[in-house]
Length: 230
Image (cartoon, rainbow, N blue to C red; front, side, top):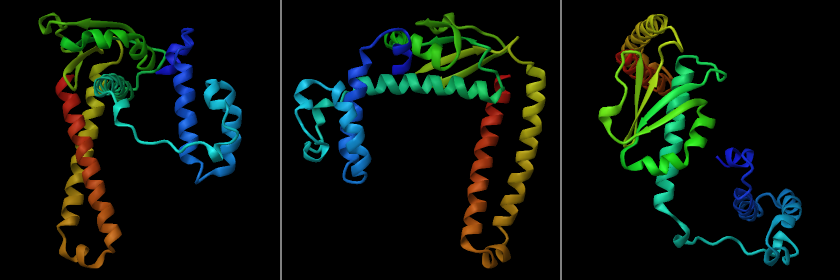
């Protein structure tokens, strides 16, 4: 997120990034002494003068836990922004939308509209969005069979996919994948219910099959959700 601001010429994140890196080097120093010392010496030229008086990271105070520096409201805002970016990017990956093709996105933001609007450039840049619309009233949201609807925390995201991908082809692909996953789940369930397999197979093999079943089941659930939307 800092990269977006830096690319726009905003240098205010630099001091925060340097501070975080410097404190991280102090945390790592007992485990990586030579590398952290070298990096720290080069970094101190970017630190405030009060910190550059310390001759070596070896004698720098180890960071202490300070509860009053935490900002739960800011953390919640950033968590929402990153969740929205992740959801849009997942849809792009799911439908194989190339990064050069930027999407139009509408967000029914409600009470979070102001905070999300302040991070609109970040969302547009990191999720490859062309036009980003923020709405207060759910009655203004677009209604279309070609729109994918995503829920992230308390906001709803609408992504029109008509003209972006061939939804008929995507539906067929997802239906085939759902059928394959259903067969795989049936095979795994039968194997895991087989007493002879459970008795003879090594525990790590049995556990691996259990994890495969969980993974495929989660994937099948996501496919069903996508099919319901297109």
